Length: 65
Image (cartoon, rainbow, N blue to C red):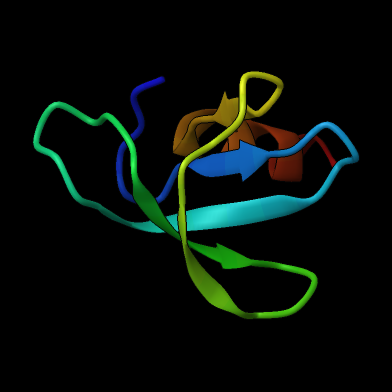
């Protein structure tokens, strides 16, 4: 899993969080994530069922509405 700052992590239950910092230049975990449901920031090592939504995909989803 490789992400960029601003991408979103979505857990299997639908919990979403925005990546606020990536610790490695190549985009591998861990990531600092701000969870939408709690506004809490946490260092995250995503599980195998977690998927990435890029900033472009998220913008398209919000625009489509």
